[in-house]
Image (cartoon, rainbow, N blue to C red; front, side, top):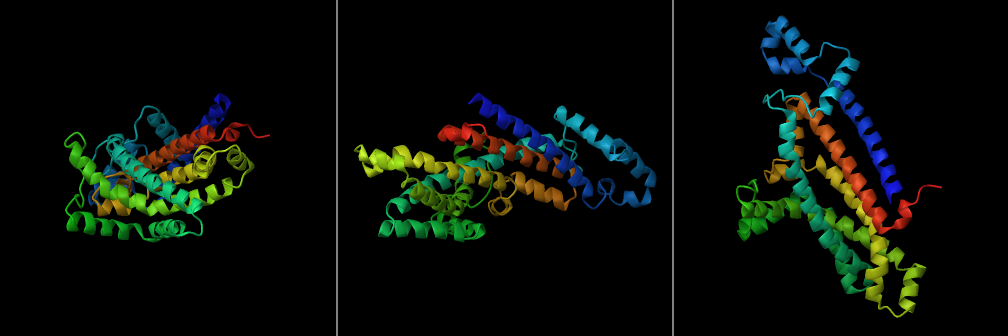
Length: 318
């Protein structure tokens, strides 16, 4: 396990280093002048002020020197200062990232809790009513646009039944119960939308694994069909499911804009979009780097989880 962990850590470090360079170059290719944004109307009437601010920010230096300066600041946890608010970018990210991770984690947990049992039922009851019903639920889940699911949930559980708040964010420290209630609808929107993918992946993988010799041998030794599936087939069938969940988690880091806007959830996606509209380059740069870093960490965790489920993955390539 240790050599496998060392290989994955090395790969993750190299990927993060490359991502850092890509983010820096991409930001400097964006149109617009951050100094003009900071100074507003003064930028056109006071060229001396523009030059002074550019020198303070180091934007008058060559790209290589700017990159070295940025890397040095990163090493000390300094991501710069927002051009809009004047607050440190690291502080804003520290507030937003846990909210996004909580929302994504709760949504994916709901997707797995709903999708894996549906996939198992669909695989075990192929051709029967239960299997067809599970398949229809899976198709309905990933076919519906996420904003439609969110609106339907609000109409039913908030406006109709009055059980849950329709939107808003309450810090857990301020009111734990209200925080959890506010989390349910956006998390279920993610979960129901992704449930179908998990169910279909589980069904396809489990159907394939159930035909393997080791499952047939387990049945021949006297295990019931259900126990053979739970003990031998399902753990191996979950390897591709774990992979797709990890990929989805990384994609959702910057892709929950609609959900965060619909439910007024102040996460990382909404921060990135608002910074892009305002040309707030330090925030854009910090947000993109945070997304890359978290995605790499998630990929590393998925690799380790797959290695624990299937020991063959831990073997070095021949």
